[in-house]
Image 1 (tube, rainbow, N blue to C red):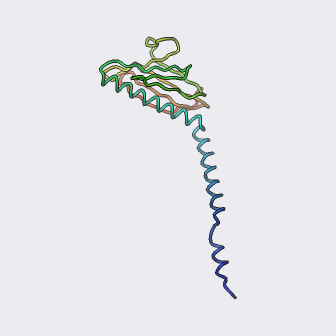
Image 2 (image 1 turned 45 degrees about the horizontal axis):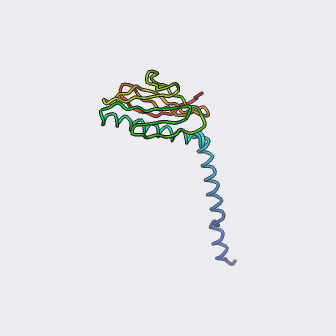
Length: 157
């Protein structure tokens, strides 16, 4: 019985094509899992927007404290725009529902929401809800402390 060395070497390894095929399958499965569990690209955009708004709210609060003057953060859900201290502004993503809840007395005009931060760090409070596909994100501003929090919501309208 003769032992052929070349046939033993071929039987033990994988070809480059087989390795690439396995990597492609793993990548496709990961993308599907991310879309299924994370709400897809719309969910990722909403999450990013919620965290961006929270950062701008915190910035506006910091400006109020450092300047000693009240500062306003404005949000227009219909136009999907926000405006923060020192002329900062941005857009909220298309798709999904946007809803602002806050002090009616501070609204500069109908449909525009305002969160006012005071020099002591307190605020008028408010909530911006970004929702789609039964889930979404709330950006909450506490009125006594001015603390800004982002949390995930389930079963949104």
